[in-house]
Image (cartoon, rainbow over all chains, first blue to last red; front, side, top):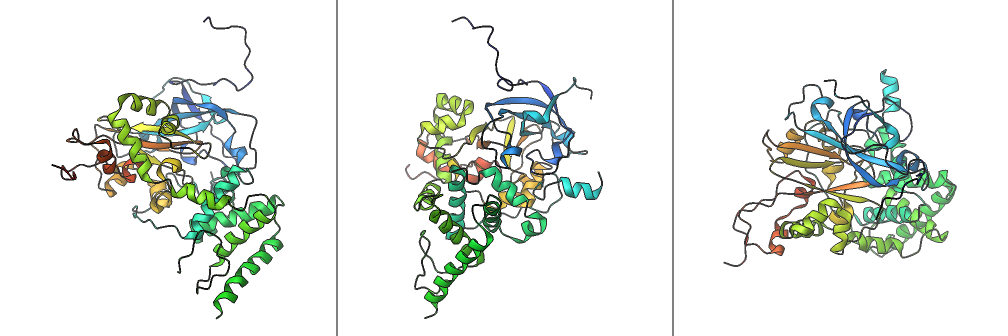
Length: 112
Length: 112
Length: 213
């Protein structure tokens, strides 16, 4: 069946990032509840997987929001060597973690 | 970031990347009350009286000293009490009176 | 400590005196039931649910994936749906991603912020998983942590650490050990330990566990 065009999705309904995209975790340090550990703040990553379906922002969920304002979470991968100076393991070792869309921004191509 | 701001903005449970000792392979069989506490958490989440993220936030809000001094399920039940107070579901007075009542049941039963 | 059943012991004749936190737990539960915010039997029922979730469930999932390639593919595509095919209900809103160990990749699971764990399919996590050393170091030096479990991963194998922070939980699908071609699915499941499904140890087979032959 042909794809139906001219459908306008609601804001946040479709993922803003796709597998393979380079992204950066925000350099923000809000107080209050968060689910983005300090050790990944500001790090560059690659989108591994889009988690479906969109879900509530867990930082707001922690203060009682149980519904609404749903966006996507993304499983992102960060090389261990980029997380820890002097990482002792293999250069191919990676850290994967789920991050809510509002914590991610598009990152320019690899700059070494 | 200054140490003071790091203390403020890093959650006391955000352990990733901190230094720590060997992993000791400890485990224990849950005491009946701990299992009931875990079941209580699940039931509270089902009803969205206290969702799982609120529970996490409640534990974080205990602060580093209490987190270090209370055991896992002790942290949960204190967090639940605090959140129930915040939501005006219980008052501290109600909880204290009920705890006295429960305590009395055991004391009178065992005072033979 | 005297044993007592899962009901709130209403002044049993034993010498058991609950501690402060247990009294708090009982009091909170009773108040919530009195206020009709939760049903009187719900906690008891949920204890039954929890008791029915043990690593044996995860082991069955792993063994089935080892013997059934189509199931394995479905499991890797959607872990929760594949577990539900086997009758493992998920009583919460978590998803499950199953992480396949291969000759090139070894997976390890942690929750640095708290204790997220695939409870519907593995039961409750061990204390060490929830304590600081594992949570702090699994993401900084996974190879050293694995070595503390007696697991050495060669440098040409990538270690992939998954830090559970959101709605998805993780189950490691360990490599099937060599020499197990003749084992039944049940015998295979008996080899799979909880720690292998967290990713801290491999599944081992020493060729001497079979009851027949």
